[in-house]
Image 1 (cartoon, rainbow, N blue to C red):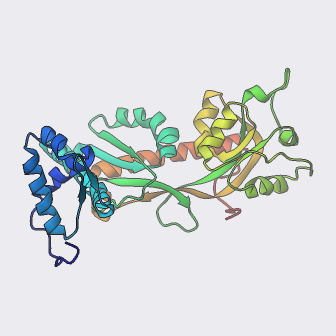
Image 2: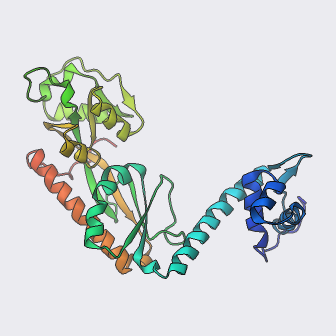
Length: 316
């Protein structure tokens, strides 16, 4: 089969059988799910193998196992079938124009969108939000998504949504009895939590003229959300994006250290497809998100004494 001549797929009839067999690792169990005979499933898969020109399964006496190429194809087929089922369900309901499908990062979904979506629903009760939280880059043009929001470096980014700013936050549990708040001079009393690099902490210390001292950088994280959570439970003072911490500050589980902030080179940006960006449902969602972001920026300026979220990008 390795030497088979490459030819176009002329039938998709075997893909559902292949997907089912790949999930179960068995023609017999796949046959039970699809209400077919094992022989029929095996024949469909064999015909699909002939069509694609490579082996999908290794046949063992009591089970089957995906080949490396079969594994790659199985992942793609599973995703395509999920999108197909979702599209058919939406079209069957006749309300596709009222369903907004958004892809965004786990952090933005949990820390920004989820707490605010009720306000969007109140304003647009006819729109149904379908939120897919993933770090995977999506192809909005060709996938079943209306738009996406991603996080990254925003220097001159044409589709920037929000330039973030790093702020120092801490748990009220760190306050000593009778102590009202922590200030810059207290930074050497606690571990300084950071994400991958201490560069932004060093920039903050130098920018605000904090006296040199022995600072504890013993606790680093690879995820800013984890650093913020570590601050909530009292493991130290974290330097995190305001967009990630603002709701926790509102709820009182984090305190914002006055004057302790620094510009950040990263933020959120839109991923759009021109033909979808003009849809009324997409326009409504984008307008609402931008209003929420503007309100968050106003709150940030008030809390840190007028410094804006943009400016010098700081360390790379």
